[in-house]
Image (cartoon, rainbow over all chains, first blue to last red):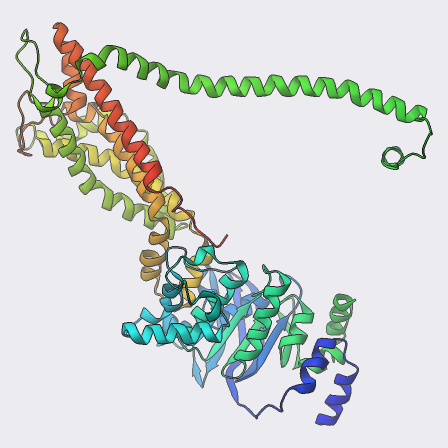
Amino acid sequence: MTSAATESRRGQGTSTHLRARRADAPVDPPTRPRVVVEELSALFGKTRAVKDVSMELLDKRVTAIIGPSGCGKSTFLRSLNRMHETISGASVTGKVLLDGHDIYAPEMNPASVRKHVGMVFQRPTPFPTMSIRDNVAAGLRVGRLDPSRSSIDEIVEKALRRAALWDEVKHRLNTSAVGMSGGQQQRLCIARALATEPKVLLLDEPTASLDPISTQSVEELVWELRADIAVVIVTHNMQQAARVSDFTAFFLHGDMVEFSPTAEIFTNPRDPRTESYITVRFG
Amino acid sequence: MSGRAEVMVAPPENSRPSQRQRSTATRTAKTLRRRRLVNSFMVGVLVLSAVLATVPLVFILLYLLKAGLSSVNLAFFIKTPKPPGEVGGGMYNAIVGTLMMVGMASVLGMPVGIGAGLYLSERKGAKLANVVRFLADVLNGLPSIVMGIFAWQLLVKPIGHFSALAGAAALAAMMIPMVTRTTEEMVSLVPTSLREAALALGYSRARTALTVVLRTATAGIVTGALVVVARIAGETAPLLFTALGNQFTSYNVSQPMSAMPLQIYIYAQSPYDDWIKQAWAGSLVLITLVLLISLAARFATRGRFDLGGD
Protein backbone atom coordinates (compact mmCIF):
# COMPACT_ATOMS: atom_id res chain seq x y z
CA MET A 1 0.00 0.00 0.00
CA THR A 2 1.60 3.27 -1.09
CA SER A 3 1.01 6.37 0.87
CA ALA A 4 -0.39 8.09 -2.20
CA ALA A 5 -3.09 5.48 -2.47
CA THR A 6 -3.89 5.94 1.20
CA GLU A 7 -4.09 9.68 0.75
CA SER A 8 -6.50 9.40 -2.12
CA ARG A 9 -8.72 7.17 -0.04
CA ARG A 10 -8.61 9.64 2.77
CA GLY A 11 -9.81 12.27 0.37
CA GLN A 12 -13.09 10.46 -0.12
CA GLY A 13 -13.34 9.46 3.55
CA THR A 14 -16.69 9.34 5.26
CA SER A 15 -15.53 11.30 8.28
CA THR A 16 -14.75 14.97 7.98
CA HIS A 17 -12.95 14.82 11.31
CA LEU A 18 -10.65 12.26 9.88
CA ARG A 19 -9.63 14.45 7.00
CA ALA A 20 -9.40 17.60 9.06
CA ARG A 21 -7.16 15.99 11.62
CA ARG A 22 -4.85 14.25 9.23
CA ALA A 23 -4.34 17.24 6.97
CA ASP A 24 -2.24 19.24 9.43
CA ALA A 25 -0.79 16.31 11.32
CA PRO A 26 2.96 15.94 11.00
CA VAL A 27 4.25 12.71 9.53
CA ASP A 28 4.61 10.24 12.38
CA PRO A 29 8.03 8.81 13.03
CA PRO A 30 8.26 5.05 12.47
CA THR A 31 7.57 2.92 15.48
CA ARG A 32 7.72 -0.63 16.81
CA PRO A 33 5.19 -3.04 18.24
CA ARG A 34 4.76 -2.63 21.96
CA VAL A 35 2.29 -5.44 22.50
CA VAL A 36 2.13 -8.59 20.40
CA VAL A 37 -0.98 -10.70 20.84
CA GLU A 38 -0.69 -14.32 19.70
CA GLU A 39 -3.76 -16.53 19.32
CA LEU A 40 -5.45 -15.05 22.34
CA SER A 41 -8.72 -16.59 23.45
CA ALA A 42 -10.67 -15.36 26.45
CA LEU A 43 -13.21 -17.63 28.07
CA PHE A 44 -16.06 -17.36 30.52
CA GLY A 45 -16.33 -20.92 31.81
CA LYS A 46 -16.46 -22.84 28.53
CA THR A 47 -17.80 -20.00 26.40
CA ARG A 48 -15.17 -18.38 24.24
CA ALA A 49 -15.83 -14.64 24.20
CA VAL A 50 -12.66 -13.90 22.23
CA LYS A 51 -11.41 -16.44 19.69
CA ASP A 52 -7.80 -16.80 18.54
CA VAL A 53 -7.01 -13.15 18.07
CA SER A 54 -3.52 -12.21 16.89
CA MET A 55 -2.46 -8.62 16.41
CA GLU A 56 0.30 -6.11 17.04
CA LEU A 57 -0.26 -2.92 18.97
CA LEU A 58 2.23 -0.26 17.96
CA ASP A 59 3.97 2.10 20.31
CA LYS A 60 3.00 5.79 19.98
CA ARG A 61 -0.13 4.86 18.07
CA VAL A 62 -3.81 4.66 18.96
CA THR A 63 -5.59 1.42 18.16
CA ALA A 64 -9.38 1.44 18.24
CA ILE A 65 -11.50 -1.64 18.73
CA ILE A 66 -15.03 -1.47 17.39
CA GLY A 67 -17.88 -3.91 17.07
CA PRO A 68 -21.44 -4.51 18.21
CA SER A 69 -22.34 -5.10 21.86
CA GLY A 70 -21.24 -8.52 23.07
CA CYS A 71 -18.64 -8.97 20.35
CA GLY A 72 -15.85 -9.46 22.90
CA LYS A 73 -14.08 -6.13 22.45
CA SER A 74 -14.09 -5.24 26.15
CA THR A 75 -13.14 -8.79 27.10
CA PHE A 76 -10.24 -8.62 24.67
CA LEU A 77 -9.12 -5.32 26.19
CA ARG A 78 -9.33 -6.76 29.70
CA SER A 79 -7.15 -9.68 28.60
CA LEU A 80 -4.34 -7.24 27.82
CA ASN A 81 -3.73 -6.36 31.48
CA ARG A 82 -4.97 -9.57 33.08
CA MET A 83 -8.16 -7.97 34.36
CA HIS A 84 -10.24 -10.60 32.59
CA GLU A 85 -9.19 -13.32 35.03
CA THR A 86 -10.48 -11.34 38.04
CA ILE A 87 -13.99 -12.45 37.10
CA SER A 88 -14.71 -15.86 38.59
CA GLY A 89 -14.73 -18.63 35.99
CA ALA A 90 -12.86 -16.52 33.45
CA SER A 91 -9.67 -17.75 31.80
CA VAL A 92 -7.32 -16.95 28.94
CA THR A 93 -5.29 -19.00 26.47
CA GLY A 94 -2.62 -17.76 24.08
CA LYS A 95 0.10 -15.18 24.53
CA VAL A 96 0.31 -11.46 25.11
CA LEU A 97 3.86 -10.21 24.77
CA LEU A 98 4.59 -6.85 26.34
CA ASP A 99 8.02 -5.73 25.09
CA GLY A 100 8.74 -9.36 24.35
CA HIS A 101 7.69 -10.76 27.73
CA ASP A 102 4.58 -12.92 27.95
CA ILE A 103 2.31 -11.37 30.58
CA TYR A 104 0.65 -14.76 31.02
CA ALA A 105 3.91 -16.52 31.84
CA PRO A 106 3.63 -18.40 35.14
CA GLU A 107 6.24 -16.26 36.88
CA MET A 108 4.42 -13.03 35.97
CA ASN A 109 2.61 -11.25 38.77
CA PRO A 110 -0.69 -9.85 37.49
CA ALA A 111 -0.39 -6.83 39.76
CA SER A 112 2.95 -5.84 38.23
CA VAL A 113 1.55 -6.35 34.71
CA ARG A 114 -1.25 -3.93 35.56
CA LYS A 115 1.25 -1.34 36.74
CA HIS A 116 2.71 -1.24 33.23
CA VAL A 117 -0.59 -1.48 31.40
CA GLY A 118 -2.93 1.23 32.71
CA MET A 119 -6.67 1.04 32.32
CA VAL A 120 -9.58 3.48 32.34
CA PHE A 121 -13.15 2.26 32.51
CA GLN A 122 -16.48 3.18 31.04
CA ARG A 123 -17.68 4.99 34.13
CA PRO A 124 -15.37 7.30 36.04
CA THR A 125 -14.07 5.49 39.13
CA PRO A 126 -12.40 8.00 41.43
CA PHE A 127 -11.85 6.61 44.93
CA PRO A 128 -14.50 8.46 46.92
CA THR A 129 -12.60 8.46 50.21
CA MET A 130 -9.48 10.02 48.72
CA SER A 131 -8.63 13.60 47.76
CA ILE A 132 -7.83 14.51 44.17
CA ARG A 133 -4.11 14.36 44.96
CA ASP A 134 -4.37 10.97 46.66
CA ASN A 135 -6.40 9.61 43.78
CA VAL A 136 -3.70 10.50 41.29
CA ALA A 137 -1.00 9.16 43.62
CA ALA A 138 -2.94 5.99 44.42
CA GLY A 139 -0.96 3.82 42.04
CA LEU A 140 2.39 5.15 43.19
CA ARG A 141 2.32 3.61 46.63
CA VAL A 142 2.08 0.11 45.27
CA GLY A 143 4.84 -2.43 45.72
CA ARG A 144 8.34 -1.27 46.58
CA LEU A 145 7.79 2.13 45.02
CA ASP A 146 7.44 4.56 47.87
CA PRO A 147 8.30 7.97 46.54
CA SER A 148 8.92 10.91 48.83
CA ARG A 149 6.33 13.58 49.45
CA SER A 150 7.90 16.14 47.10
CA SER A 151 8.38 13.72 44.25
CA ILE A 152 4.75 12.63 44.66
CA ASP A 153 3.68 16.25 44.27
CA GLU A 154 5.78 16.47 41.14
CA ILE A 155 4.37 13.28 39.66
CA VAL A 156 0.81 14.30 40.52
CA GLU A 157 1.25 17.65 38.80
CA LYS A 158 2.78 16.05 35.74
CA ALA A 159 0.04 13.45 35.47
CA LEU A 160 -2.69 16.05 35.90
CA ARG A 161 -1.08 18.26 33.25
CA ARG A 162 -0.90 15.35 30.84
CA ALA A 163 -4.57 14.68 31.50
CA ALA A 164 -5.34 18.36 30.82
CA LEU A 165 -6.84 18.72 34.27
CA TRP A 166 -4.16 20.61 36.18
CA ASP A 167 -5.52 24.14 35.67
CA GLU A 168 -8.98 23.10 36.76
CA VAL A 169 -7.97 21.39 40.00
CA LYS A 170 -4.61 22.85 41.08
CA HIS A 171 -6.34 24.96 43.75
CA ARG A 172 -8.27 22.10 45.28
CA LEU A 173 -5.97 19.11 45.22
CA ASN A 174 -6.92 18.22 48.76
CA THR A 175 -10.68 18.21 48.21
CA SER A 176 -12.69 15.10 47.47
CA ALA A 177 -12.79 13.85 43.91
CA VAL A 178 -16.51 13.12 44.19
CA GLY A 179 -17.43 16.77 43.74
CA MET A 180 -15.98 16.94 40.23
CA SER A 181 -17.98 16.75 37.02
CA GLY A 182 -18.16 13.45 35.14
CA GLY A 183 -15.71 14.63 32.50
CA GLN A 184 -13.26 15.84 35.13
CA GLN A 185 -13.59 12.57 37.03
CA GLN A 186 -12.79 10.63 33.89
CA ARG A 187 -9.74 12.77 33.17
CA LEU A 188 -8.73 12.27 36.81
CA CYS A 189 -8.90 8.52 36.23
CA ILE A 190 -6.71 8.95 33.15
CA ALA A 191 -4.26 11.01 35.23
CA ARG A 192 -4.28 8.28 37.87
CA ALA A 193 -3.50 5.68 35.23
CA LEU A 194 -0.73 7.87 33.75
CA ALA A 195 0.96 8.62 37.09
CA THR A 196 2.61 5.21 37.19
CA GLU A 197 4.11 5.81 33.73
CA PRO A 198 2.49 2.86 31.99
CA LYS A 199 3.76 1.61 28.65
CA VAL A 200 0.26 0.98 27.36
CA LEU A 201 -3.03 2.66 28.24
CA LEU A 202 -6.28 0.74 27.78
CA LEU A 203 -9.47 2.76 27.51
CA ASP A 204 -12.76 0.88 27.77
CA GLU A 205 -15.43 3.12 26.24
CA PRO A 206 -14.01 6.07 28.17
CA THR A 207 -16.57 8.57 26.93
CA ALA A 208 -19.70 6.41 27.08
CA SER A 209 -21.02 8.23 30.13
CA LEU A 210 -19.83 11.73 29.21
CA ASP A 211 -21.45 14.73 27.54
CA PRO A 212 -20.19 15.87 24.11
CA ILE A 213 -17.87 18.56 25.44
CA SER A 214 -16.21 16.26 27.96
CA THR A 215 -16.03 13.62 25.24
CA GLN A 216 -14.16 16.02 23.03
CA SER A 217 -11.65 16.86 25.74
CA VAL A 218 -11.02 13.17 26.43
CA GLU A 219 -10.59 12.52 22.71
CA GLU A 220 -8.09 15.34 22.38
CA LEU A 221 -6.29 13.93 25.37
CA VAL A 222 -6.09 10.50 23.77
CA TRP A 223 -4.56 12.08 20.73
CA GLU A 224 -1.93 13.85 22.89
CA LEU A 225 -1.04 10.66 24.74
CA ARG A 226 -0.09 9.13 21.46
CA ALA A 227 3.14 11.08 21.61
CA ASP A 228 4.46 8.88 24.42
CA ILE A 229 2.68 5.55 24.72
CA ALA A 230 0.59 2.94 23.00
CA VAL A 231 -3.15 3.53 23.48
CA VAL A 232 -5.93 1.02 22.90
CA ILE A 233 -9.48 2.35 22.94
CA VAL A 234 -12.66 0.30 22.84
CA THR A 235 -15.57 2.28 21.51
CA HIS A 236 -19.01 1.68 20.11
CA ASN A 237 -18.88 5.08 18.50
CA MET A 238 -17.33 4.73 15.07
CA GLN A 239 -16.93 8.44 14.50
CA GLN A 240 -14.82 8.39 17.63
CA ALA A 241 -12.71 5.53 16.32
CA ALA A 242 -12.25 7.45 13.09
CA ARG A 243 -11.30 10.63 14.94
CA VAL A 244 -8.78 9.31 17.43
CA SER A 245 -7.17 6.17 16.09
CA ASP A 246 -4.40 5.18 13.73
CA PHE A 247 -5.51 1.56 13.47
CA THR A 248 -8.90 -0.02 13.90
CA ALA A 249 -9.86 -3.60 14.64
CA PHE A 250 -13.39 -4.79 13.97
CA PHE A 251 -14.67 -7.55 16.24
CA LEU A 252 -17.74 -9.70 15.61
CA HIS A 253 -18.93 -12.64 17.73
CA GLY A 254 -15.50 -12.95 19.37
CA ASP A 255 -13.57 -13.00 16.09
CA MET A 256 -11.36 -10.22 14.87
CA VAL A 257 -12.80 -9.73 11.39
CA GLU A 258 -10.52 -6.99 10.20
CA PHE A 259 -7.54 -5.03 11.46
CA SER A 260 -6.34 -2.17 9.25
CA PRO A 261 -5.22 1.42 9.30
CA THR A 262 -8.22 3.47 10.38
CA ALA A 263 -8.37 5.45 7.15
CA GLU A 264 -8.61 2.23 5.21
CA ILE A 265 -11.14 0.39 7.29
CA PHE A 266 -13.61 3.25 7.15
CA THR A 267 -13.21 4.01 3.46
CA ASN A 268 -12.38 0.70 1.91
CA PRO A 269 -13.09 -2.23 4.22
CA ARG A 270 -11.83 -5.57 2.97
CA ASP A 271 -14.41 -7.75 4.64
CA PRO A 272 -18.09 -7.47 3.64
CA ARG A 273 -19.09 -7.87 7.32
CA THR A 274 -17.02 -4.83 8.24
CA GLU A 275 -18.52 -2.92 5.39
CA SER A 276 -22.09 -3.67 6.33
CA TYR A 277 -21.44 -2.81 9.97
CA ILE A 278 -19.76 0.45 9.10
CA THR A 279 -22.26 1.55 6.50
CA VAL A 280 -25.24 0.77 8.69
CA ARG A 281 -23.67 2.53 11.65
CA PHE A 282 -22.51 5.56 9.71
CA GLY A 283 -25.93 5.78 8.08
CA MET B 1 -55.14 3.28 18.09
CA SER B 2 -57.25 5.52 15.87
CA GLY B 3 -59.38 6.47 18.86
CA ARG B 4 -56.34 7.61 20.78
CA ALA B 5 -55.03 9.54 17.81
CA GLU B 6 -58.38 11.31 17.53
CA VAL B 7 -58.14 12.47 21.13
CA MET B 8 -54.56 13.62 20.71
CA VAL B 9 -55.19 15.81 17.68
CA ALA B 10 -56.25 19.33 18.54
CA PRO B 11 -59.74 19.88 17.17
CA PRO B 12 -60.33 22.78 14.80
CA GLU B 13 -61.66 25.84 16.54
CA ASN B 14 -65.40 26.09 17.18
CA SER B 15 -65.81 22.40 16.42
CA ARG B 16 -67.85 20.39 18.89
CA PRO B 17 -66.53 17.12 20.32
CA SER B 18 -67.61 14.08 18.38
CA GLN B 19 -69.89 11.41 19.83
CA ARG B 20 -66.92 9.15 20.29
CA GLN B 21 -64.87 11.77 22.08
CA ARG B 22 -67.77 12.50 24.42
CA SER B 23 -68.25 8.87 25.36
CA THR B 24 -64.52 8.44 25.96
CA ALA B 25 -64.57 11.50 28.18
CA THR B 26 -67.49 10.17 30.24
CA ARG B 27 -65.78 6.82 30.63
CA THR B 28 -62.55 8.46 31.74
CA ALA B 29 -64.40 10.63 34.23
CA LYS B 30 -66.15 7.60 35.72
CA THR B 31 -63.01 5.47 36.12
CA LEU B 32 -61.10 8.51 37.27
CA ARG B 33 -63.47 8.94 40.20
CA ARG B 34 -63.11 5.27 41.07
CA ARG B 35 -59.34 5.28 40.69
CA ARG B 36 -59.02 8.37 42.87
CA LEU B 37 -61.15 6.72 45.54
CA VAL B 38 -59.09 3.52 45.53
CA ASN B 39 -55.93 5.58 45.57
CA SER B 40 -56.86 7.62 48.63
CA PHE B 41 -58.08 4.49 50.41
CA MET B 42 -54.81 2.65 49.84
CA VAL B 43 -52.72 5.67 50.84
CA GLY B 44 -54.82 5.82 54.01
CA VAL B 45 -54.14 2.17 54.79
CA LEU B 46 -50.40 2.64 54.31
CA VAL B 47 -50.24 5.79 56.43
CA LEU B 48 -52.17 4.00 59.16
CA SER B 49 -49.73 1.07 59.07
CA ALA B 50 -46.78 3.44 59.27
CA VAL B 51 -48.28 5.22 62.27
CA LEU B 52 -49.17 1.95 63.98
CA ALA B 53 -45.60 0.77 63.55
CA THR B 54 -44.26 3.69 65.58
CA VAL B 55 -47.06 3.85 68.15
CA PRO B 56 -45.47 1.28 70.51
CA LEU B 57 -42.23 3.28 70.66
CA VAL B 58 -44.04 6.53 71.40
CA PHE B 59 -46.24 4.80 73.96
CA ILE B 60 -43.27 3.16 75.71
CA LEU B 61 -41.33 6.41 75.78
CA LEU B 62 -44.22 8.38 77.23
CA TYR B 63 -44.97 5.74 79.83
CA LEU B 64 -41.32 5.45 80.85
CA LEU B 65 -41.08 9.22 81.20
CA LYS B 66 -44.16 9.24 83.41
CA ALA B 67 -43.13 6.30 85.59
CA GLY B 68 -39.36 6.73 85.68
CA LEU B 69 -38.47 10.39 85.31
CA SER B 70 -39.18 11.21 88.96
CA SER B 71 -36.51 8.73 90.09
CA VAL B 72 -33.84 9.85 87.62
CA ASN B 73 -31.60 12.18 89.60
CA LEU B 74 -27.92 12.62 90.27
CA ALA B 75 -27.93 9.92 92.94
CA PHE B 76 -29.24 7.44 90.39
CA PHE B 77 -26.06 7.86 88.37
CA ILE B 78 -23.46 8.04 91.17
CA LYS B 79 -24.83 5.87 94.02
CA THR B 80 -25.02 2.12 94.38
CA PRO B 81 -28.15 0.22 95.47
CA LYS B 82 -29.36 0.53 99.06
CA PRO B 83 -30.65 -2.49 100.99
CA PRO B 84 -34.36 -3.19 100.53
CA GLY B 85 -36.59 -0.89 102.52
CA GLU B 86 -34.12 1.97 102.55
CA VAL B 87 -35.07 4.80 100.21
CA GLY B 88 -32.52 6.21 97.75
CA GLY B 89 -29.45 4.76 96.13
CA GLY B 90 -28.77 4.43 92.45
CA MET B 91 -27.51 2.22 89.67
CA TYR B 92 -23.90 3.32 89.38
CA ASN B 93 -22.78 -0.30 89.60
CA ALA B 94 -25.09 -1.33 86.75
CA ILE B 95 -24.17 1.60 84.53
CA VAL B 96 -20.47 0.82 84.95
CA GLY B 97 -21.14 -2.87 84.37
CA THR B 98 -23.08 -2.26 81.15
CA LEU B 99 -20.41 0.08 79.79
CA MET B 100 -17.62 -2.35 80.67
CA MET B 101 -19.27 -5.47 79.34
CA VAL B 102 -20.57 -3.87 76.15
CA GLY B 103 -17.12 -2.38 75.66
CA MET B 104 -15.40 -5.73 76.11
CA ALA B 105 -17.94 -7.43 73.87
CA SER B 106 -17.26 -4.84 71.16
CA VAL B 107 -13.51 -5.34 71.40
CA LEU B 108 -14.02 -9.10 71.12
CA GLY B 109 -16.82 -9.14 68.57
CA MET B 110 -16.29 -6.23 66.18
CA PRO B 111 -13.02 -7.35 64.55
CA VAL B 112 -14.34 -10.88 64.05
CA GLY B 113 -17.67 -9.65 62.68
CA ILE B 114 -16.13 -7.09 60.34
CA GLY B 115 -13.55 -9.59 59.11
CA ALA B 116 -16.21 -12.21 58.49
CA GLY B 117 -18.43 -9.67 56.71
CA LEU B 118 -15.55 -8.62 54.47
CA TYR B 119 -14.89 -12.26 53.65
CA LEU B 120 -18.54 -12.95 52.81
CA SER B 121 -18.66 -9.98 50.49
CA GLU B 122 -15.30 -10.42 48.78
CA ARG B 123 -15.73 -14.19 48.28
CA LYS B 124 -19.39 -14.14 47.44
CA GLY B 125 -19.71 -17.40 45.56
CA ALA B 126 -17.37 -19.51 47.70
CA LYS B 127 -18.93 -22.59 49.29
CA LEU B 128 -17.60 -21.69 52.73
CA ALA B 129 -19.04 -18.18 52.35
CA ASN B 130 -22.51 -19.59 51.69
CA VAL B 131 -22.26 -21.85 54.74
CA VAL B 132 -21.03 -19.01 56.96
CA ARG B 133 -23.76 -16.68 55.70
CA PHE B 134 -26.44 -19.27 56.43
CA LEU B 135 -25.06 -19.96 59.91
CA ALA B 136 -24.83 -16.24 60.67
CA ASP B 137 -28.51 -15.90 59.78
CA VAL B 138 -29.37 -18.82 62.04
CA LEU B 139 -27.34 -17.28 64.86
CA ASN B 140 -29.11 -13.96 64.35
CA GLY B 141 -32.41 -15.70 64.91
CA LEU B 142 -31.21 -17.61 67.96
CA PRO B 143 -33.10 -16.75 71.17
CA SER B 144 -30.71 -14.81 73.39
CA ILE B 145 -31.50 -17.05 76.36
CA VAL B 146 -29.97 -19.94 74.44
CA MET B 147 -26.84 -17.86 73.95
CA GLY B 148 -26.79 -17.32 77.72
CA ILE B 149 -27.04 -21.03 78.50
CA PHE B 150 -24.36 -21.75 75.92
CA ALA B 151 -22.00 -19.22 77.49
CA TRP B 152 -22.74 -20.63 80.94
CA GLN B 153 -21.90 -24.16 79.78
CA LEU B 154 -18.72 -22.99 78.11
CA LEU B 155 -17.35 -20.27 80.37
CA VAL B 156 -19.08 -20.41 83.75
CA LYS B 157 -19.43 -24.08 84.60
CA PRO B 158 -15.83 -25.13 83.83
CA ILE B 159 -14.42 -22.08 85.65
CA GLY B 160 -16.72 -22.50 88.60
CA HIS B 161 -18.12 -19.00 89.07
CA PHE B 162 -19.98 -16.26 87.25
CA SER B 163 -17.93 -13.49 85.69
CA ALA B 164 -18.21 -10.29 83.68
CA LEU B 165 -15.90 -11.78 81.10
CA ALA B 166 -18.33 -14.63 80.47
CA GLY B 167 -21.07 -12.02 80.10
CA ALA B 168 -19.02 -10.05 77.61
CA ALA B 169 -18.29 -13.24 75.67
CA ALA B 170 -22.00 -14.05 75.48
CA LEU B 171 -22.74 -10.53 74.24
CA ALA B 172 -19.89 -10.77 71.73
CA ALA B 173 -21.26 -14.07 70.44
CA MET B 174 -24.56 -12.31 69.80
CA MET B 175 -22.81 -9.39 68.22
CA ILE B 176 -20.66 -11.25 65.72
CA PRO B 177 -23.37 -12.52 63.35
CA MET B 178 -25.13 -9.16 63.36
CA VAL B 179 -21.94 -7.24 62.60
CA THR B 180 -21.03 -9.85 59.98
CA ARG B 181 -24.23 -9.35 58.06
CA THR B 182 -24.30 -5.54 58.24
CA THR B 183 -20.65 -5.38 57.20
CA GLU B 184 -21.33 -7.70 54.29
CA GLU B 185 -24.23 -5.52 53.18
CA MET B 186 -22.23 -2.31 53.43
CA VAL B 187 -19.21 -3.77 51.64
CA SER B 188 -21.47 -5.13 48.90
CA LEU B 189 -22.65 -1.57 48.26
CA VAL B 190 -19.15 -0.61 47.11
CA PRO B 191 -19.39 -0.76 43.32
CA THR B 192 -17.40 -3.45 41.51
CA SER B 193 -15.99 -0.72 39.30
CA LEU B 194 -14.02 0.67 42.28
CA ARG B 195 -12.50 -2.74 43.00
CA GLU B 196 -11.56 -3.08 39.35
CA ALA B 197 -10.07 0.41 39.29
CA ALA B 198 -7.85 -0.50 42.24
CA LEU B 199 -6.83 -3.84 40.73
CA ALA B 200 -6.06 -2.14 37.43
CA LEU B 201 -3.64 0.17 39.24
CA GLY B 202 -1.65 -2.86 40.35
CA TYR B 203 -3.19 -3.24 43.80
CA SER B 204 -3.21 -6.74 45.24
CA ARG B 205 -6.53 -8.26 46.26
CA ALA B 206 -5.77 -7.76 49.95
CA ARG B 207 -4.75 -4.16 49.46
CA THR B 208 -7.83 -3.49 47.36
CA ALA B 209 -10.07 -4.96 50.05
CA LEU B 210 -8.43 -3.02 52.88
CA THR B 211 -7.58 0.36 51.42
CA VAL B 212 -10.33 0.83 48.88
CA VAL B 213 -13.30 -1.40 49.65
CA LEU B 214 -13.23 -1.28 53.45
CA ARG B 215 -12.31 2.43 53.47
CA THR B 216 -15.21 3.25 51.21
CA ALA B 217 -17.64 1.21 53.30
CA THR B 218 -16.36 2.50 56.66
CA ALA B 219 -19.16 4.99 57.27
CA GLY B 220 -21.79 2.35 56.65
CA ILE B 221 -20.01 -0.21 58.80
CA VAL B 222 -19.70 2.27 61.70
CA THR B 223 -23.41 3.03 61.46
CA GLY B 224 -24.29 -0.66 61.45
CA ALA B 225 -21.91 -1.42 64.32
CA LEU B 226 -23.38 1.33 66.50
CA VAL B 227 -26.88 -0.01 65.91
CA VAL B 228 -25.65 -3.45 66.99
CA VAL B 229 -24.06 -1.97 70.13
CA ALA B 230 -27.35 -0.27 70.95
CA ARG B 231 -29.18 -3.58 70.62
CA ILE B 232 -26.66 -5.50 72.69
CA ALA B 233 -26.73 -2.94 75.50
CA GLY B 234 -30.31 -3.90 76.25
CA GLU B 235 -29.83 -7.68 76.32
CA THR B 236 -30.73 -9.38 79.61
CA ALA B 237 -30.91 -13.09 78.91
CA PRO B 238 -27.27 -13.70 77.91
CA LEU B 239 -26.15 -12.03 81.16
CA LEU B 240 -28.46 -13.92 83.53
CA PHE B 241 -26.29 -17.03 83.60
CA THR B 242 -22.95 -15.34 82.99
CA ALA B 243 -22.43 -11.97 84.67
CA LEU B 244 -25.20 -12.78 87.16
CA GLY B 245 -25.40 -9.29 88.61
CA ASN B 246 -23.89 -7.60 91.62
CA GLN B 247 -25.34 -5.20 94.19
CA PHE B 248 -21.94 -3.59 94.61
CA THR B 249 -19.73 -1.79 92.17
CA SER B 250 -17.15 -4.15 90.71
CA TYR B 251 -14.38 -3.47 88.24
CA ASN B 252 -13.09 -7.02 88.37
CA VAL B 253 -13.90 -8.76 85.12
CA SER B 254 -13.39 -12.24 86.59
CA GLN B 255 -16.15 -11.63 89.15
CA PRO B 256 -19.91 -11.21 88.83
CA MET B 257 -20.85 -7.77 87.59
CA SER B 258 -24.08 -5.88 87.35
CA ALA B 259 -25.61 -4.51 84.17
CA MET B 260 -28.57 -2.24 83.64
CA PRO B 261 -30.90 -4.85 82.17
CA LEU B 262 -30.03 -7.22 85.03
CA GLN B 263 -30.61 -4.58 87.67
CA ILE B 264 -33.93 -3.67 86.08
CA TYR B 265 -34.89 -7.34 86.00
CA ILE B 266 -34.14 -7.81 89.71
CA TYR B 267 -35.75 -4.54 90.80
CA ALA B 268 -38.89 -4.99 88.75
CA GLN B 269 -39.57 -8.38 90.39
CA SER B 270 -39.05 -7.07 93.92
CA PRO B 271 -41.93 -6.18 96.23
CA TYR B 272 -40.38 -2.84 97.27
CA ASP B 273 -41.93 0.32 95.85
CA ASP B 274 -38.64 2.19 95.76
CA TRP B 275 -36.91 -0.57 93.79
CA ILE B 276 -39.79 -0.74 91.31
CA LYS B 277 -39.49 3.01 90.79
CA GLN B 278 -35.77 2.57 90.22
CA ALA B 279 -36.51 -0.15 87.68
CA TRP B 280 -38.58 2.35 85.72
CA ALA B 281 -35.85 4.93 85.99
CA GLY B 282 -33.30 2.34 84.83
CA SER B 283 -35.47 1.48 81.84
CA LEU B 284 -35.74 5.13 80.94
CA VAL B 285 -31.98 5.65 81.17
CA LEU B 286 -31.29 2.49 79.16
CA ILE B 287 -33.69 3.37 76.37
CA THR B 288 -32.31 6.91 76.29
CA LEU B 289 -28.81 5.47 75.96
CA VAL B 290 -29.93 3.24 73.09
CA LEU B 291 -31.67 6.16 71.40
CA LEU B 292 -28.59 8.33 71.75
CA ILE B 293 -26.36 5.65 70.24
CA SER B 294 -28.77 5.23 67.34
CA LEU B 295 -28.88 8.98 66.80
CA ALA B 296 -25.09 9.13 66.97
CA ALA B 297 -24.95 6.43 64.31
CA ARG B 298 -27.15 8.56 62.08
CA PHE B 299 -25.36 11.84 62.58
CA ALA B 300 -21.75 10.71 62.90
CA THR B 301 -21.73 9.33 59.38
CA ARG B 302 -24.28 11.57 57.73
CA GLY B 303 -23.30 12.76 54.26
CA ARG B 304 -20.08 10.81 54.33
CA PHE B 305 -21.66 7.67 52.97
CA ASP B 306 -21.24 8.77 49.40
CA LEU B 307 -19.85 6.06 47.19
CA GLY B 308 -19.37 8.30 44.15
CA GLY B 309 -18.94 6.54 40.84
CA ASP B 310 -22.40 5.23 40.21
